[in-house]
Length: 473
Image (tube, rainbow, N blue to C red; front, side, top):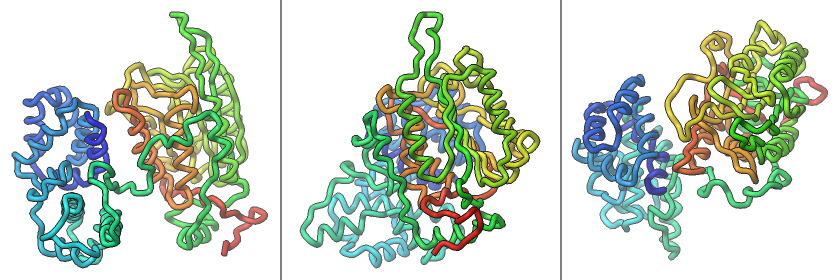
């Protein structure tokens, strides 16, 4: 699929889901099978998902990895079924597809300087189509038709349109819609990976954003007592331990292939810089056998974490269907790693967030698929676990020998740039979005599972004096 078409699908996934969530979706799938865009097996796999919005999400992911004609076929199918607003999200230049209701049109006219629905350029028509389609998507999601709420949503979803009109009024020409597509992820870089980070020394220039707003300071102050019902306490000094296990050097495999994980040292160096700036104590261990890794995990689970607010474990290694591969070629199941830190085995971390980032292949195939959760449901009743694994079960992850793994490289960037304003789940969403932009043939999708019971903010730049609760002005 063409890169611009894939970008549109990923950026409009949420709005497409909202617009198609109440339609006869199986008919759309049947048409895609008849047009040989998806197979009967894929159709069955999609319909196994529940509820319907999960089916739509999976379809969009599959389409993004399909052939070049898939996008146009999907567009024509939406048109043929009468889903004009959804079709307009894919090709917004076809402005005649959008049936505008009066309140949306009046709202756009009043909010965007220079907007005139009777005299618009092709570029403005594209934005108008996209803005109206998104507004209708929001309307599908919410019964409440409060215009003030919709005004806020539409302004957020159409970021860049007003700026374009201001440029036009001052004589500065706008870009075509396919040159730069506005996204709901408006603060993410337009090019990924960003060129200035694609080298082995990028970690020397990591600088965590500490530009904290008043709202975040208030959240920090309220949560620093440890009794906030919606936000985890994250004010201890240091915050807690970050245990980094990096298995780089492996013996050659049975075919004599070099199994060294080139580039992993860059991951480790960047992780050290990042989490030290976030006021964590970082401990790096390298090239462990299975027994050595188990002993280390037991050691950390038996530590007294009472004075800390969080524990983070990052494991970078080879892997297979059975779990994380150690340097002696024995594996440790992911679930065993998590179990060392449950309430029974690590009581001093009870009710505290436990974060696991695992960079290890989950099988032999390339790309993405739907699959089982990386956390067993036995952990769910305890809560306070978050696990992000680099790829879905049965699929490979990818690593650059110069600047490290796609997965950790992206997590490091997102935490550095956005942890001053976003909680962990939002950070994870940004990571998934960016990892999927690394490539098309070798597409990789992180597998994230969470049983966090509160929002987790890292609060960079906000500290607690003498490990006592204090107010930050």
